[in-house]
Length: 480
Image (cartoon, rainbow, N blue to C red; front, side, top):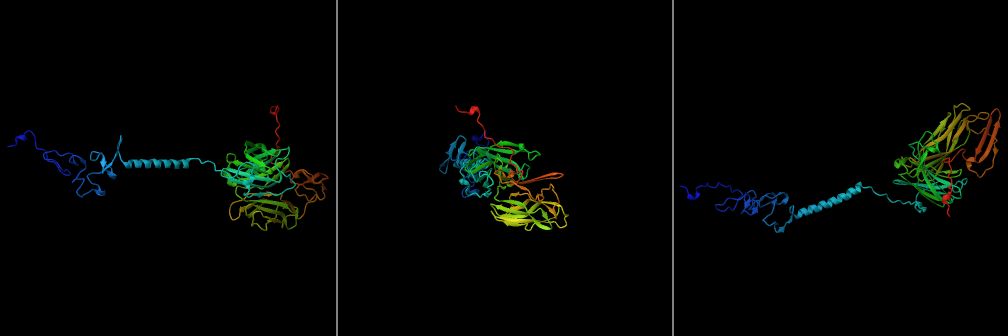
């Protein structure tokens, strides 16, 4: 017979006591993993206590990964006596603050790094200032132009220099006398030639940009930069268009100027050639052409004869190296009319500042008598010594025009002047060399022939077919 107290209810189901301890007699066990209903974790079960621990030394039940706990421990928020900080987002441990601080510091450093990598750096300071104080050029190697007493002192260029700094080019020059004297204008030009393009024709150059600084009364007054606009006529100066000015300064016989990438296309910088020209009225001095790397070569050619019987030296070349040692690896000639060009020394080295004279011959063996032969040096394969870096080459002089065996009788328009054996002499005058007549002649028979010889290159011309005028004050400019 059953116990009356047990009637109307069934016996409690059997309980699994795995992992549960301390269940009072007759009481229903609490949720799995709790001990005395107070602590979170399992003992003698999955949590394994009494010397048995989970991997990495975790005890007292299940522990969240990397030592994290879920909720409150022991009901008061203390772990081993260290309090946790409370937050409206839950319990925040000290490690959370450390991670947040590290994240903020890393973000700040990344911001600095990206601003440096993506930002546009400011222009680097220059060692040159366009202020008329030329002490900053004292240590810069100069290209020596030499003295020419046939030119006015303020036109006679003595030396100059060209230096590149990143996005700008600086040019310095010095003349024999003070620049821009008196009541008439005079100019300093810098011609910029990109050999990869076709520009304005001047002294064998293709001028793409023409920078001009001019003045009077002993002062530099204005500047102008022009760009070549193209067109089939390379002698048409009206194809230049003015694109602005540039910074420049002068004092006494020295000048300096600056051209920037905003004014020039410096993407072709390794190939660019720069030529300095000084001008006053019809007097002009033209420098050698130089690049942005140190080193240049000039060659002056002079004809020696107008007739060759067999094998003779017909041209004398004077080669001069500037600023750097130069290797000569070949001479390039324009040659017409037959015969064989004889080059005794096609390869040699020139030291910086040194000059060397070379004779170039023609062998006319087998060439019919009376044949007209032309020979002129066109270019030189010249490099900075020991490298494959080319240096700009400036070739001057008329070359040679001559006959094989004998000169034809009578006067012939051929550029050979041996048929003028007794010209009249004209004295040296104080005028530009290109118009100063030294000798002249004429012959009239069935035809009329005339001859003129000048002190300088005839029809040399100027940089531009124009002359700057001093601005005149308008009545509104007058002071009262």
